[in-house]
Amino acid sequence: MDNFVEAEAVAKLWGISQRQVQALCKQGRIEGAVKFGNTWAIPKDAKKPSRKYELKPGPKPKTTEGEQHG
Image (cartoon, rainbow, N blue to C red):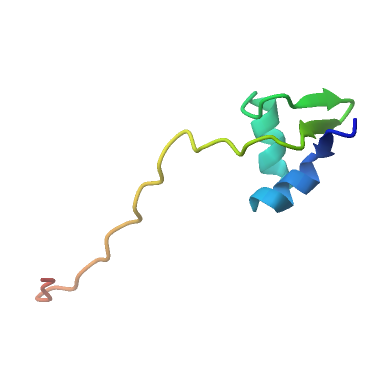
């Protein structure tokens, strides 16, 4: 078990929440991750998976009547 870390450590390393790491493990997106009881064991050398999709840009700002954007 020396080659594994818990989800909390991976979350800090990758800059995401522990819950997100657990979800990635459950989805099978972290190679080599295994579950022991309620704890995920993740290989120390695991790579952060890329996003499944790209984020869409936010809503465009509304303009008031008579205002023009150039």
